[in-house]
Image 1 (cartoon, rainbow, N blue to C red):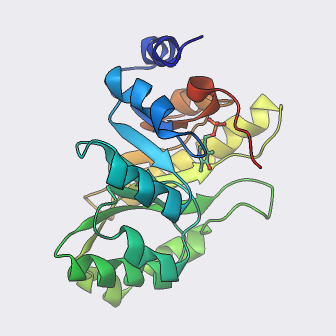
Image 2 (cartoon, helix red, strand yellow):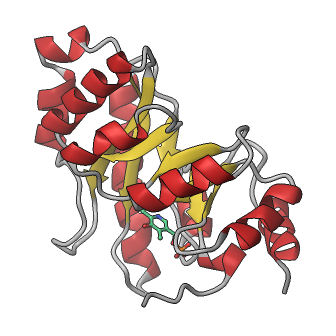
Length: 219
Ligand SMILES: *Cc1c(COP(=O)(O)O)cnc(C)c1O
């Protein structure tokens, strides 16, 4: 199947209000260009160097989303151009993003990543850590970041009930946080294997890689 066909199939399946992030990590420019030519403008990457190279080469109306774990010392490389950082999982990281955004005279949109999966290997804040950030004095002084939503990844499992439960947990946290921060509107949850469940549970942004571009080949 062609990339255009894959994109169309997904677009036809999801409500219009759900934003599709095409996860292009590991995929070469020519392949990403096919999705671009079909109208896709939002792409997700998880490695800073790869994302920067693609940003430099590809049309400038693309929104590049950093969806992977972000190391603080790498923020400076994307501060100039990144549209949305999905995986903000510490206060220190948020402060660093603010600092680097200021250097470029920008306000960078961020999602706070919440840990909902069983696996310890997935990153994210728990509810207490989340509250510590958003209730703190310092948070209100960070003028070069904007928290626009939350992001989470469910456990990698075939157990749909469990996936649904975890997405449901994230949705309730989202509903609670919306009352405290009025810039919050995005709930980023759902990947190729679980986006239908995520949308049923209230996702507004899905991150799809392999269902668009095919399986990834890590070498
Ligand atoms: C790779 C990745 C995706 C896309 O995964 P697929 O299963 O290929 O759709 C989504 N979100 C994050 C955080 C990823 O790292």
